[in-house]
Image 1: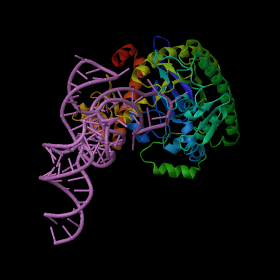
Image 2 (image 1 turned 180 degrees about the horizontal axis):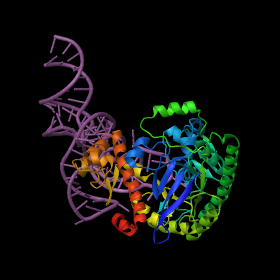
Image 3 (image 1 turned 90 degrees about the vertical axis):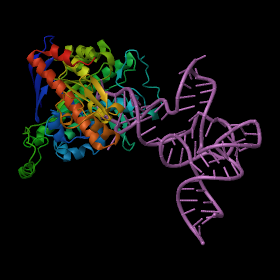
Image 4 (image 1 turned 60 degrees about the vertical axis):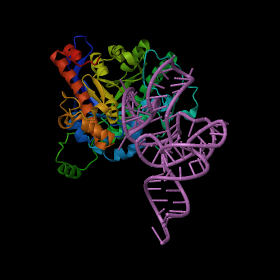
Length: 432
RNA sequence: GCACGGGUGGCAGAGCGGUCAAUUGCAAUGGACUGUAAAUCCAUCGACCUAUGGUCUACGAAGGUUCAAAUCCUUCCCCGUGCA
């Protein structure tokens, strides 16, 4: 279970700074949550994520872990934290996004963010079935495995069940995320379906909690470890302080809002999901790329104030700054790590592509203003060399920088809310 | 010295009379990436131009055959292998 305290607010009434308390520690909010899809933050160890990046939590994916190594294995390992050796708070996404990325978006150059000028074209039903790896119906989603092509069925109930097995602190309801190219009518259907699925998720979640209470209350859901084994494990650990896990630790379920770029649908979804018995919310779905923050504002105005709100899959600097002032508490996004692995690094003015010829003999740090491990110790020329040489360390150093940059941008936003200097912070950090 | 086999764009390596400014891979140059299908993908990659088209220079060098040659012939220069 989690709890949420609000410490300070922006004058606009939407943005706030707070703390999410979890069984694995606190998340001061707003916070950026790096994505560890397959229970690993690509190219980083958990120690790097904690010490070099300064991340407070991480987010893994249900679909991926279900396929590999299997949620039963994660459970057998003692849950996600123990399996991946991450002691802090965790989330799992429900697999709802994969209905989109492996469905309508599969094999196409479609992102969940659309330019305003893009014409919506409904392409959900009349595609050839072989062109995608996910098919959605009223009851759930049929996936093909990206690993071996085998067929798997996800329903709201099975997603929640798998997430309980994986054992993150916060888990998401199974929602339907669809392409921004879809028609208004299709978006409306996704909102209605997501609400029905949310009810089913919540119901099943409560049943699972009750079941757990019945026979594991003394040990905790993921505490089935003898005291002798625990002592032995702790004795081996010399670099990492153990976080005390509450004995009653169980996942907390967050509901997800859909509605695309349409104000009425966003508000409808937020009212429906917001009225349900979730302990927090995720804002998902597709957006008008030019104005994510406006849609976020529509939603946050409808959501209960005292529960945390997570903006799913958004993480460009400007989107973070505008998201925070419109009421978002936490974000996750693959952009910092994916872009880093592809040679892109954030600087205050925007983004550099380290593969550009001009960096081969640029011996300055990636960002002279940055205090991260990479910037304190390496030059642009060196990291550029690593990228050209296809050395693995390139991904590590660039990921450390990008994650540090983004995580600390949000941390500074938090401090600015507390200090009452958000406007200055925004003016200083918004990229033109 | 003789006998084979070769010399193609930055590299490797296709092509073996017209549809070849030349397949492909690598490298290079630029771009994209927002709940990870992603250490991925896309574009460009001889020069010049009144550019969904045109002109010029190019497949070791020089000649030749042909309406037409990277592709056939001759000589020369290199390289590899074998025999002396």
